[in-house]
Image (cartoon, rainbow, N blue to C red; front, side, top):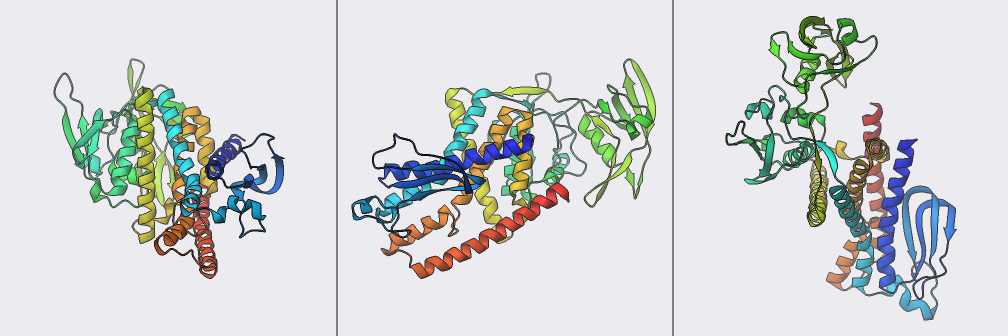
Length: 456
């Protein structure tokens, strides 16, 4: 139920803001707006405010299907217009007015993202400290000299280092570097008053196409530093059969000393010989005692990969820090984050078009609904971050030069501005059909990806 509510609220807010952008600029330009609708299909609720802008008689509507919305304006191409109202029709407006009205929807979504990111910066969010777990074997992080336990204080590209506020901040920079093919320089804090050192992650060697867990496995940084402690043990699991208890701290697995929870998870994961799990001798600290237990992980399949599992929560909660910004800095960081997410989205779309990025990066309504529910369950700030991310995606998507989207109409106006002539009705019809076909293909791919992610 939470997933459904969070999804519907997200759609309602994002669509309403998008359409309000069109509506507000249309009214400011003197265009008569006939209807403002959030949703399609059967009308669930309608109202017409008594007090509106001069010349406006807009009907506000909520439709049964919340997968879109529209602002219907007076337009000679859609019906007869009285002579006295012709100056208020959309199609009679100057080019700059029409372009402004069309662009206002996506811009409203981008502005909403700035507001949401700013609100999160002001409220503050609890995030793990940027201390690294032991890197994955044979990964870029291990090859760069990282061994686990390092506290990353600054990071950046091309030598331009900025403070790292949390582990999530570091993950975001690694994502940008991997997808953009740029090396990331990390500054590691020194210990005992000693000066820090710099480490370069050669992310340009990855040629990453998907922002998925496998990308972070190749980088080698999967999680923040945690104590290798056993949490809740599932009944009937391999952990229970081995005699493990909640609160046990694992000191070694075989001859390998264990220093953090991520390393322990990797040792469990790779405890497979062919199709059989490999028994492991664990040295466990229970209170003041050191005991040895034989643990035989269970075989599980993750896609085409066979991994070991013990049926227990592995790793204590990481050290946390409250990330909060001041009034001015919060706004600035909201603008910067919106710009960074927008730029990354545009680059990923471009890479998908030329085949440098996988179409698996496209997500549809099922994935959005899933993440809406998960983010809402984590609290207000995580849900606001989710809304901001989807708002950026909606704004950028609508600016794509597809005829059925706002960006396609802006291309028509660009042509009109360059040639002095509007696109002919015949060409308009052809382009609209092509745009609808391409959009249906994108939606089909996104839905296929959704089903594969959630049920594959």
